[in-house]
Length: 216
Image 1 (cartoon, rainbow, N blue to C red):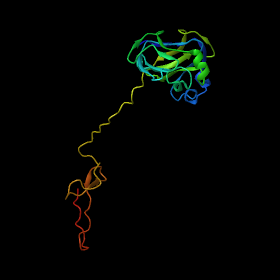
Image 2 (image 1 turned 90 degrees about the horizontal axis):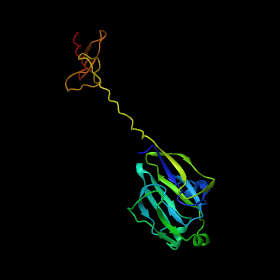
Image 3 (image 1 turned 120 degrees about the vertical axis):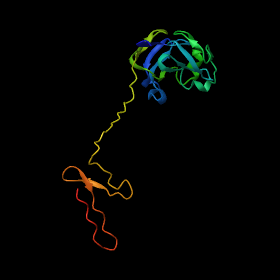
């Protein structure tokens, strides 16, 4: 995979930050980061080499998958889904391989200007995959095919390594189970000399004296 991937502008028009899109879904980056274009042209182009993974039934939006797990949503205008495809013509089909600059959709710019909430058209990176945004263009005029967003390949962070600690205890260890591990054997406790000796058994039933513990 190349160290950098440059997304080209899909439209002629004015590049603006997503935060300026008058729709909170895009402005608050609920779907992902990106850039918006206020278009002056009527053909939406592929911003990079990719595979078409979805053409919306209303033909106002296209989703693409590019190298490194990158996924993009290109959405023409706002509330254009309500047009039910009127004024739009798809130039691609799902599963089709496209190259940067290939036409994806064409649309009637005058119709959208009259009937859409806004012409502004977001390009959203819905899945960054193995990339991070390193640069983007906004606040100026762009032409279709101009560099718009630069993505840098990143190395995925590996999961934390699991460390297994193995203890080797001497045969005559002073570590013992706090209760008898085998029925009928008394627990053992450390002696003053560092070894271990049996613990004195509990008093015998009936209140009689308990047997003395054997000397070590």
